[in-house]
Image (cartoon, rainbow, N blue to C red; front, top):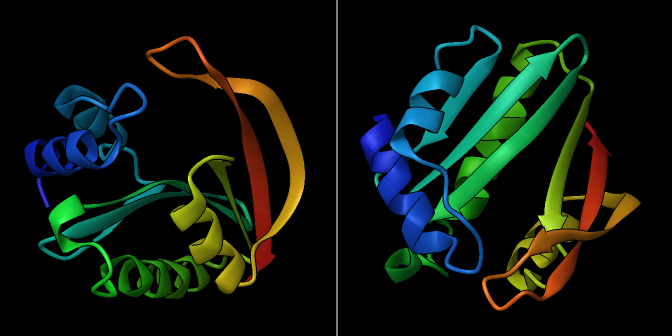
Length: 136
């Protein structure tokens, strides 16, 4: 998946916050530590450092939600993380992103910390970020 495709899906998926740009994706994927798991409707972007992998973002085309694309990408993300010798996965998710929170909880992620008022919505509302982790 190209940075243009990622930016397009990310913009469609994340309407409550500033989506990442094509340039941001292009810069990230230049790193040998960063990897992409994707299909034509969804992608996961991860970064492995030592024995830890961070799920930087997971985005699904809104017209393709509820078809298992995010679960598929997350499963393959975990497989790639283990192949890269990661033993722990971490991520950050907005408290009000209920679908994502359910996906992560159903995949054995647990809340390990919170960042109050971390996300700012266009209307000025501040949302807590949940830091979640799971063993791989």
